[in-house]
Length: 464
Image (tube, rainbow, N blue to C red):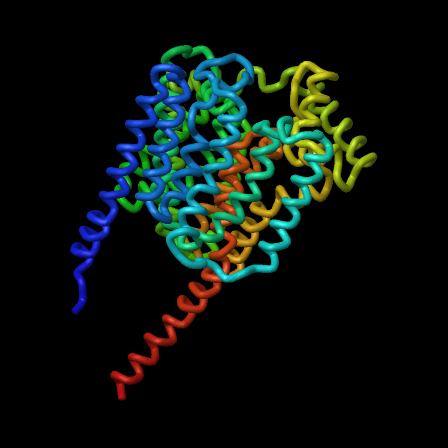
């Protein structure tokens, strides 16, 4: 006898109540025991227990939610003038970065079988990142010095990629991206109200990090909103544009423009003229709103066009490229052997503690081998886009993730993105989810090509 979906859902919910109750009791006992002596430890422990229970309830959707929440959480001061140290200890931040991919992956291992077929490429990637971890350990000399968000972020970008392959069905990515963008908007609005003259986005480390996260989450969040309401999708586009304006992240605007051009090219290649019309309408409305509203136009001009050319920035960029190419020529294969080395050198030699190109900075730090490891998620996204262009198809889910990865990759041309664990974690997880869905793009193209033949065959049968 078949069981109705609603009855099955109720049964699954009832089966989870003992776990929820046990978790609540454990939370209360541990929180009460620690609150008297170490309130901060009690808070952290309670958050951890609640997070684990929530992940267990979400099932396979826990993976994208964990990645996105850790990426957009306010680990740094809400308002600032320069990049500051996190408001939590490095070991807490590193623990959260490590737990985001590993805890849902371990839950999935405990509850079910293998979700993807073994892959030689994935195995080689795991060996590569294990070797890079050993290299970093040999360079830094101890595990303690490796507990740094730059180091953990780089290594767990690869771990997130490999763990994401287990969740190839992609459940939860669209909703998690939408929620993450809403969280970024809420904290951004709060930061703007507290200090309207400051740039927005310091709570994720730096305003350009904020802009990279916005463009990375925007395509998937926009697809989630569009599937529910065109008005909601339009509001999301306008709100995201405001977030990028107030963050003063010009590299993120470049990334958004590149994403728009690629999206238009894909829709034109597939012949989706209705989608092209929707994109054109949104661009015209947004541009008209900016130009026709005096105050908004003044904000855009002030935020995006002021101080575009600064002597210090131009000088530092020239120094960055000269120093990077000279150092890479000296140590091309493995570099200095530690993420963050180039940032420290830049801070010692100039007034800015970073190299202005993320690909150069990671090559200085980890050599060409490290650059290859960091480029794997970006390569997967480019492969997806190239295949869609070649076959003339536009699978919404795959392109939403691929365009998000592309946006973060463009920001990296102008920014040391690989120093920020939030960006690397999101980049690796999205790339890993895409890596097991590339083959489905060919299947969609085959099905699309076969549809006209099936219709002609049906017409012939009816005529006979």
